[in-house]
Image 1 (cartoon, one colour):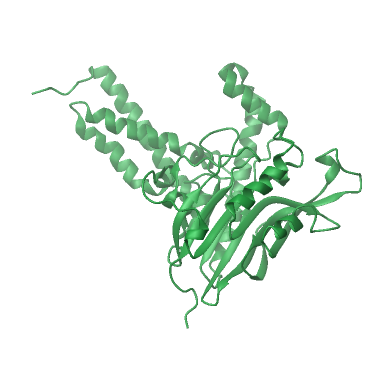
Image 2 (cartoon, rainbow, N blue to C red):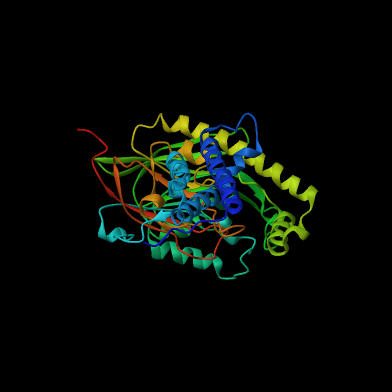
Length: 393
């Protein structure tokens, strides 16, 4: 009989110690997912950004111990993953097989697309002169029933310009807008006069009638959740909500510093810069937690099945993710595959854009995240069929 491999005692003890660290790390990620940092910002809240690595580490130790004489030690990490399953499960999409129908033409239901369009690349950050036309072409090709756009902008003097009217002509007669900021256009692009002002916020474009528009005040500094009731037919109405939660607000200097550290490692690190970044991350995390609490309270007052989508600026397993999602389903978890990255910069692990939905009313048929470099975010698309009537006769 083939004997199991046995590590020398010193190495075995080291592995036990490192395995213990990974278990504690993962348990901390679980604790962070239900600990509200809104009233007392803490750096611990940022540990949710490392949950994927903690989970991978524990999986690695499970396989490591299974190939030794001490197979029972694999239970250490197995139990940790079981306890922390609620934060581990959303990290990776496992739907590599099976049907993934993203075409609304094949179902009677609802195709929803959400995208932080970064003001249609107004500042030409992508260095692609055709980016604006490509964004519109992608929307036309995907042809969602409901289109939700974050960081959408329109002229303060004429709300139909420059993109509202174009999108309506693509087949979206119903439009709702909410303003979060009013900016001088010349601060973003040189192709503007000193008097040009733009409104920046969320937009909902729909093929179905929209009613009961709500601008939910989720923060004193003009952060809003745009809510509407989508009337699919006389028997099916949904409460659709679009959000864009607090970003860290890194400037070009900070993004360049992060890029240098990624490329050069420790030698590029600067203590003051690192402390500044950490403070911004901590405060933004606390701010998002407060917004999540407000969203959760508003969600409970809605009369019809809920869909919440948008740019959350937070990762799966975070307090924000757990609080806003609640009993809703995550479209990516149900039909997505891989890491599902939705933010193009910094790290390939950043899935921060979501579509949450009521599983009792909607059956997800497909999920897609087109790999296009037209914004700092990728679009997220989910296709649903109607499960049951939302209005009882």
